[in-house]
Every structure is written in structure tokens, then in C-alpha cells.
Length: 126
Image (tube, rainbow, N blue to C red):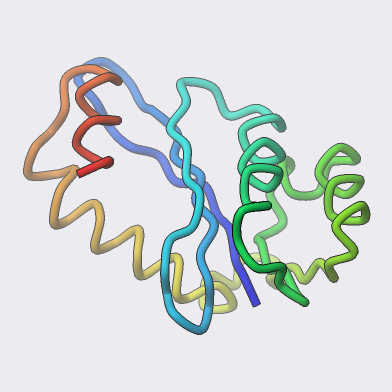
């Protein structure tokens, strides 16, 4: 089973958006991407990039508009993966990636406080 989520990353003037896919068993972060817009392609591109990895039986997300879009549903259907969604307002349903966001923010983002997007991408890569 895999999960995905989007989080906001504060930078000098505004926010960036980070989407990541995580394996529930190993807690390994698979593909991830930082963007200055939170559109549907942010999520669907990440899903397509995961083809270098094994295929999950179930893919869990929250009920965000990116994950409930027709485009994302088509990508899921083509992969023949069952889509599971958290209950409304139930962050605990996706606890592994929520815990990852907390660790990432408190151990890197809030300490480094990146001023620009390129610095954020470089910091996250490390």
C-alpha cells in the first residue's frame, strides 16, 4: 500500500507545495515534487513517475481536489490500482505521511527557512 499527500512549505515570500508518495510498509518516500502551484498535474505527474517502483495494490490519499479529480482517477484506473481515501477531516487515516511532514518541517524547513524555491528543492534533495 502506498499513500500520497500535499503539504505547504513556507519560504521567504509565500509558500511552495510538496507532494510525496510513500510506501506504507517501508515508510520510504518514493517520488516527490516541489511546485509553486497546487494544480492537478502536480499529483498526476508524481504518480506516473513511480513506474520505476513496484506497483501497489492500494493507493491512499486524502479527499483533496487534486486526488479526487478526473485526471488523477484516470491515471489510477490505468494502473489498475485501488484508490482508498481518508475520511473527511481524518488526518489519522494517513498517519505515516502526516508524521513525515511533521519531521520534515521541524527538522529541516523551519530551521533552514529557505528564502527561495531553488534553495528549498536543493535542501530537500539532500
